[in-house]
Amino acid sequence: MNGRLAKAGLVIALFALFAGLTLLFFPKERLVYLLTGRLAREGVTLCFKEISCGLTGCRLQGVTVLTRGVPVAKIQNVSMGIDRVTLRSVLPVGTVAGMVKYRVDRAVFHPFSGTFEATGDFGSLQGRVDLLKRHIALTLIPSGRLRRGGELRGVMAFDGKRYRYESDF
Image (spheres, rainbow, N blue to C red):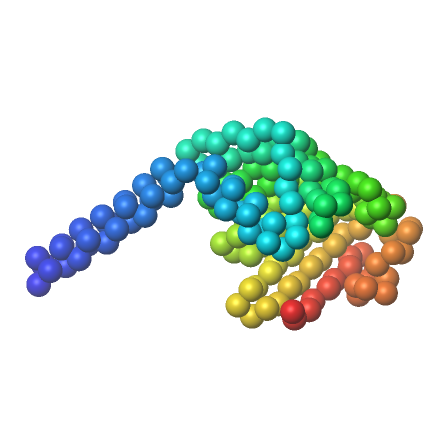
């Protein structure tokens, strides 16, 4: 019985080692181009000035986001790792800049847990997306500027300190 248990443990350890090495040595640049190809099918194009990849992820510098050929945002840099995607300095551009007057200083998405957080001149935002249950929950602690503007009062519930939003999709 101990022999079978030892063999099972060895098989599990070898599988874990194989999976880890595959993630480590899979060309990360190829993953970036797979992602940009998938976004392009949805009408979103990512144009970037520079890409650099290492063992655990990639970094894109000078990213412009286009929707159906129209620029909507500029991102200073995007870092994609195994367990997170981080955006730094997201600015709306073009016609979107007239509608969205807030910038995002930093946003982090954790794909395995479905959680994200963002900070900017709008305040701080935390949320969770559950793709299996098709549910999203957001909590926004607004900055004084956003609180005075009151742009979200009809969209999100406000309890005096924070905005909350939950929905199924």
